[in-house]
Image 1 (tube, rainbow, N blue to C red):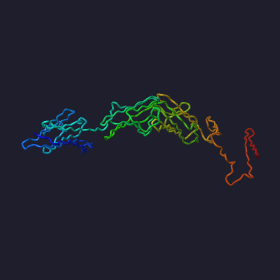
Image 2 (image 1 turned 180 degrees about the vertical axis):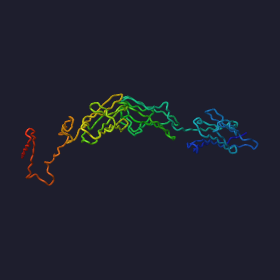
Image 3 (image 1 turned 45 degrees about the horizontal axis):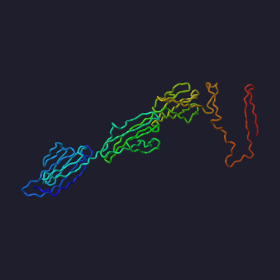
Image 4 (image 1 turned 90 degrees about the vertical axis):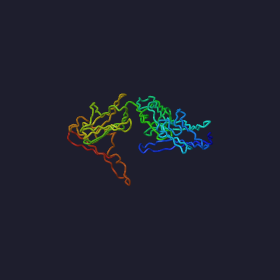
Length: 375
């Protein structure tokens, strides 16, 4: 009869790198050291390996019972028994038993913990979303893995996350991200990041779009330029969806890019545009009002820019101004002689006489009368 003296259990986890796929593959190795005392006539006891959670007999002494090629057994003179599990899968997790057919039977248990990198559960995770301004939004993210992954949210553009009734935060922890009465400031890409300490962490990008009616702001509503020059006027616009954007004259004529005009739309942000119109070789007919117009399904808006010539750029009507009167520059431009009454450093006004000369043209008499006055 065999007398089992000692039974020592050991577990060793190793990691090997596949030269083919480049991904880390894991294997588990259970080692049981068995020592017994027996007479020379007696045979060594039979050793069996069992996966108790799956009720699966793996091996019986030297014979591999399971057909799973990832399992293997080895021993050293029937005293040190080893169970090898290659390319460990989640199904391999659980309790393993080394059983010896002594009388009474002897056994020892070992447990295999299998850790699994996180994986995004797309079925229960939000996809790209488009809502109207002032709507309530909930973004969901779920991940699987062992241990259970933690979920963290952040903006891909590193902007703050604007939560309901709170200040902006750089990140948010939890499966559900709730935001109430969203505005255009909430628009952008959000990252759902799942991690559980097992590399690699994974993430999913969710783009939130917020729709609103167009809004134009125009800091320069009056632009002056000389005849013959090229001039550029601009409008700043916020809109989503983008819709239609264009320039037109005050008579409703739409302006398109050609030899005379160059119309350009530049994206300056997720929902911001810069409308730019260049008018080449200014003629008197080009002076007047220009409109930048934006329309989308939620509304439309426009802004006016008045383009006028600079002082001295207008001729008389007989010379072809075609009815455009000279603008009043009294409030828009400084006098060329403004400040002349102020002395330069190191000079005084002593002994100086200012003379103002006014000339009146008398067309009927065809004569010039000059009157000088000394204050």
